[in-house]
Structure formats: structure tokens, C-alpha cells
Length: 234
Ligand SMILES: C[S@@+](CC[C@H](N)C(=O)[O-])C[C@H]1O[C@@H](n2cnc3c(N)ncnc32)[C@H](O)[C@@H]1O
Image (cartoon, rainbow, N blue to C red):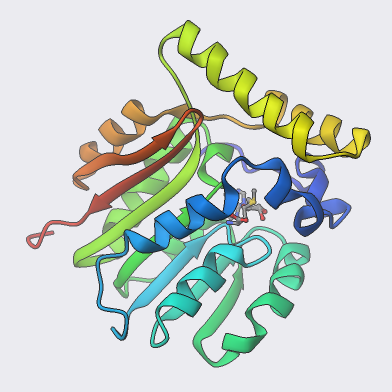
């Protein structure tokens, strides 16, 4: 497993500003969440069990809970501060959601019960290559046959030219949508020096490598939605 980051690596955890600026700073934040939920291949009334890795302030979980009224969600996050941020948002669904303070891979490895879906938004880029591979292996073990994994995240391009275009687009979005200079600088620092994004192609290959057939199902410059499904024999 890769180094687990501490609270000092997450400015928005220590100053509790995630909800204040994330939806503005992150390009296509809500559209991307809607897309993720629309890719969950279950009837709306299905009684599905879902794990949300890096639940943060609960936005991803709330999208799942709202769109699947019989879903049960377990939201996992490293920091109690973020779980506190999530509580008001998920309160309307309190009887269908459990929040757990844990590192994602450790949480997945701590039990064997299998779930219908594992989702994660804007989180997995905090792991290095080995950390991502370990996480993907742990995800594979916790999915039911035909279970799905959907990850929405920052990615990089193999082509330096495309990488530059995509990065500039992200920075332009930040500039245009976050008016507070101090927060713009904090997000830019976090993205440039704390995040460890990988290319979508590499992550797809690592998922395939642990027995989770995967593909990039949607992409918009640095953002990618990657989907993987457990095969019935796993
Ligand atoms: C950018 S926020 C995303 C939150 C939410 N999914 C969203 O889309 O708004 C990333 C969250 O992942 C959590 N996180 C990062 N690495 C983690 C890990 N290895 N295990 C558990 N949580 C982690 C952070 O504490 C943070 O709350």
C-alpha cells in the first residue's frame, strides 16, 4: 500500500472548506456525478448495497441514495472532519447510510461481504501506482458477481501536448469559477503538488490486471469516468 496522506495534505479538510468551493473548483462536478449515477446498471427500485470510497462531504453518496431509493450506502473516509461534513447532507437518508472512518483499502480488506457496486469520485488520485493496484485488488474481492465499480477521477494524458491542453483547461475553470484568490491558490497547489493522478489507460490496465474488466466510459479532458464489472465467475 502507498503512503497514506495526513490531514495537512488536504487543506479543505483542515479548514472545512470543501463544500464551500469544491463544486465550483472541480470542472463538471455535478454533471460528472449525474453521469456516474446514470451508469449504475440497476433498476431504480433495486435493493442494492453500495460502497462510496472517499465519501468526503457526501455528495456522491447523496446522488446514489436519491436516485436509488432502496439503495444502502456505506461511505468511507480517512477523516472524521469530512464525515462530519457529510452528515447534514445524508441526514435525509440516515436509515440507509453508514459512515465509516477508515483508509479505503483497509476498509475493503476488513470484511468479505460482497456488494453490488463500489463508487468513488475525486479520491483515488491520492494513491500512487502501487496504492491504486492494491485498492483495485481489494475492490475486486468485495464485488458480487456482476457487481460494478465506477470511478470518477482526475487523470493525466500520455501525450505531453494533450496533457498541457487539459491542465490549462482545468486552471482556466478554476480561475473563472473560484473568486477567492487564496482558495484558488490552495486548489492549484493541491492539484499540482499533492494529487498523484494516473492515466486512464493505465488504470484500466491495472483493473483488468486484477480481474475486473474495465473501460473508460466517459472523458472530458482531465476528468474520466472508468467503469469495471466483476465477471460472474469471480
Ligand atoms: C476530493 S474529496 C471527494 C469527496 C467526494 N467523493 C466528492 O466527490 O465530492 C476526496 C476525499 O477522499 C478522502 N480520501 C483520500 N484518500 C483516501 C483514502 N486512502 N482512504 C479514504 N479516504 C480517502 C479525503 O479525505 C476526501 O474527503
